[in-house]
Length: 170
Image (cartoon, rainbow, N blue to C red; front, top):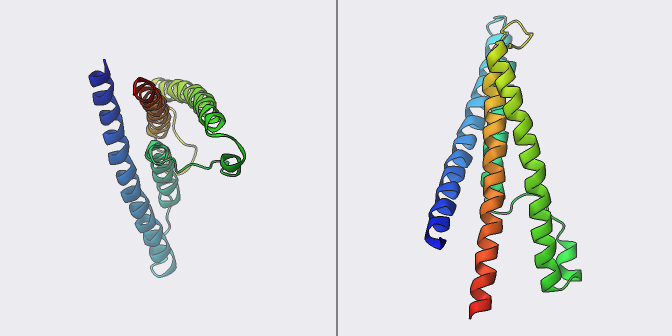
């Protein structure tokens, strides 16, 4: 069972690392799109209608798909002042309870993002702008990102549990 868990943990971490780096690439592409917009509007006087919305879509994808990568390194905001005030055991429990509550929240958001994705896909919903892109890709990446964030939290909780049992056995 532990071997299966380690394989699952490695797979989730590998996927989240890959999507974290790809999110960085998307941010660079987004910057290029915005620079293009400024150049063509300012110097060439071309009207533009897709660049801002494309940038928003790219940033949505980058934000949600990098969340699990950030969680893997515990890069999200934490309350570090409590670390020095509480005992090691209390901090461990605070971390577990915080991870469980965070995972529950992320699962709630993921569930609703999957519903939004399905609705946008089934109904063919589009943005109400001149470019009018389909909305399902943004909802898909929101749902995938929150699902992977939830899985990353599950992996961290499971790894903590296995680590605690190893310490008890020694």
